[in-house]
Amino acid sequence: MIGLLLYLALGVGLLVFLWALARRKGAPVEGCGRQFVEARQALRTLQFGLLPESLIERIFDPEDFRYVTAASPGEIGKLFLQERTRISLMWVRRVRSEIRNLMHFHLAYSRLHAKLSLLTEIQLALDFAVLLLACRTLRMLLYVRGPYGARAMVGVLTAAAGRVCAASEKSLAFLNPPALESFRRDSAGHGAAI
Amino acid sequence: MLSLLLWPAGLLFELLLLVRSVQTKTFTKYFYFYAYISCIFAVSTGLYIGRSMSPSFYEAWYWPTQFATLMMGCGVVLEIVRQALPAYPGAERIARVASCAVFAVTFCYVEWHVASRTEWSTVAATVELERDLRVIEALVLFTVLAIVFYYRIDLGKNVTGMIVGFGAYVGVSLTTLALRSFLGARFNAGWGDLQTMSYFFALIVWTVALWSYSPNPDPPGGGGGSAGYDALVDGTRARLDSVRSQLGGVAR
Image (cartoon, rainbow over all chains, first blue to last red; front, top):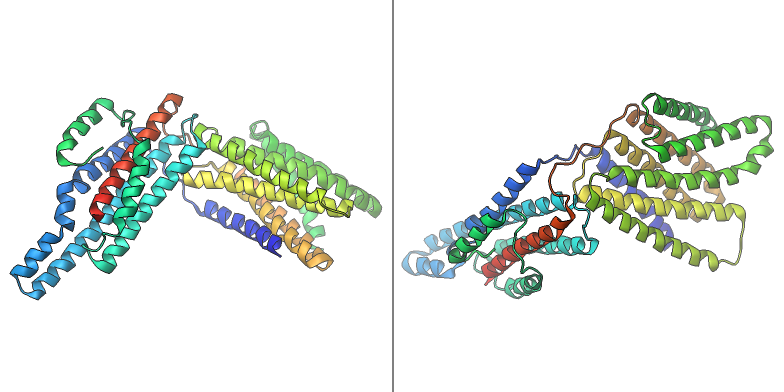
C-alpha cells in the first residue's frame, strides 16, 4: 500500500510539475548588465538603506516608546506603537525582498559556471531559505508582539550568523573589487558591515 | 476498443513527426528523440500488420518489442537532459550528478527487490521493469524540472514539448502501473486505454511543439569562467552573512 501511494504521488507530482511548466511564461532573460546593476542596487539598499545600525536602532529601540509613554497620554503611546509596528513590518518586507534579489542574482550567475558545486549550492540554498524564513518569523513576531518583542530571535540568528561567518571571510571581489573595497571602508563607519 | 482506434492515428502522427524532422532538418539535432520515435513507429507498424495477419503474432511479439521501446524511452530522457541545459554548464552539472545518483539508487533498489523475489514470470517481470524504468525516468524528469524552475532557465518550444509530452506519458504510465499492480487484472482494460490515450496525447504535443525548429533562448552573457564560481559563492556567502548579522542585531 505504501509503495502504491509512493508511485501514485510520483506520477501525480510529475503531472503537476508539467502543468506548471506548460503554464509558465517565458522566464525573464536578464541581461548581464541589468543583473549586475540590480544586485548592486540590492546590496546598496540593504547596506545603506535598510541595515545601518542607526536606522535599526531608530526603529527597534524601546527607549523611544518609553519616552513617548512617559511624556504624553496613553493614546499617543498607542498610536506611536501602531506606527512603529507598521514601519518595522515594512522594513522586514523590504529586507526580504532585497534578499530575494540577491538570491536571484546568485542563481542567474551560478547556473552559468561549469565549476558549480552541488554541495555548495545546496548549502547556499539552505542559507537563503533559513534567512528568508527568519524574515518571515520576524514578521510574525512583529505582528504578534510588536516591534519590541523580538528578543527571542537573538539566539537563533546569532548562531546562524556564526556558522556562516566561518565560511565567509573572503571579499566580494567578483563584482567590482575596487568599488567594493571602498564600500567596505566607507561602511565601517556606519556599522553596516559587508 | 479505444486503443484499436487510436493505434492507426498514432502511426500517422509518428510518420508526420518523422517527415517533419527531415523537412526541418531536426532529426540529427534531436537524434535520440527521433530514434525513439522511429523505433516506436517501426515496432507499431510491424505489430499492426502482423496482428491483421495473425493474432498469435501480436501476442508473441508484444512483450519483447515492449522491452525494446522501453529501453529506447530512456533515450528521450537523455535527450531532454542533453537539450535542456547545454547553455548552463553549472545547472547541467547538477542535473548530471543528481540524475546519476537517482539512477544508481533506483537501480540498486530494483536489483535488491528482484533478488529477493521467489517467483518469476516474463510478463510480470516486464511490467515491473517498465514500472521501475518509469520511476527512474520520472525522477530524472523531476530533477531536470526542479533545476529549470530553481535556476529560472528558459526553455525553447521544442524542448518544452518533449518534456511535457514524455512527462505526461511517464506520469500516467506510472500511475496506471501502480494501480494495476494494486487492483490486478480487473484494471487491465482501463490500464491499456489510459496508456494509449496518454501516448496519443504525447504525440499531439510533440507534433505541435516540434513542427518547426525552435531552439532554447540564449542565456544572458557574462559569468561562465570556472575561476569565477568560487568568488561568486564567497560573495553570496559574504552578503548572506552581512544580512544575517544585521538581522540578528535587530532582534537584540
